[in-house]
Length: 294
Image 1: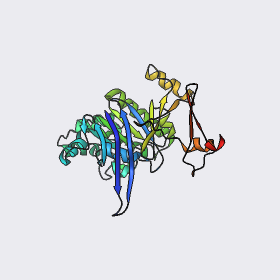
Image 2: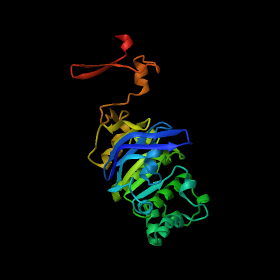
Image 3: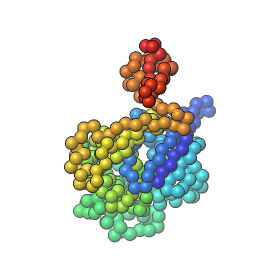
C-alpha cells in the first residue's frame, strides 16, 4: 500500500533558513495492515502523515501510495487522490466536523463534494460505528468519543483504501480510547482497509502488530508483536496478559547506518559532546563501546 524510499521534506522558513523535517525516511506498509507511528515532537511523524494524505508534497525521494506516485501527481490528480484514496481523522474534532450540521449531514458532506450523495450510505456508516441512534444529533449533544466516531464515519464516506489517523485518542479517556481502537480493528477486519495511526498512546501501540518509531526525520526502529495469534478472539483474551508485548528492532538504512537511542548512549557513559564509538565484531555479535573505557 505504501512505499517510502529516501523520503526528504524541507520547509523553507525564510530566505536564509530551512528545516529538514524528513531526512531520507524509508518505510513500507502492506495492504490491509494496521500500523502505528510514534516519535517525539518534531521527529517528522506528522509531516509524513500529511504527505501520505496528499496535504503536502515531498521535496525529494519516492512516495508511492496505492500505486500512485505522489511526487509526480498533478494538482488535479492530487485532489482526486484525496477524495478517492485516503480518509483522514484529526485529533482536534474542530478539523473533522462542522458543528451546525447533524452527525448524518457531516458524513454526507464528503459524498456531496464528490458528487455521489447517498443518505443511505451515511446512515450505514454511522451504524457501522455504533452511532445509528445519534444520526440526527448535532455536535453539542455528542460526547468527545461519539464525535470521534462520527469523524471515523466521515473518513470512510468515499470508500478509501487508506485511513490516516493523527492522535485519534488524544482527547478522550482510556476507556473511550479502547473503544476507538476496537473500532479501527473492526473496520480493518470487515473492510480490509489499511490504517496508519500516529499516536503517543502506549495503550494503542501495545495492541498493534507493528509500530514504527521515527527519530530526527528517519525510521529508527520497529516494534513487532512477539506473538501473532491465530484468531481475533485469541488476541482479545491474551494481549492484556503480556506486559512485554513487542520486541524492538533497529532499522538499518541502505548505507548500513542505524540510529542509537540517546538513553543507550547515556548507558555506556557517552556524553553528547562525543561523536565517536568503538565498534567490534566478537563471536558473531556487534559490540559498541565508549572509546574512553577501552
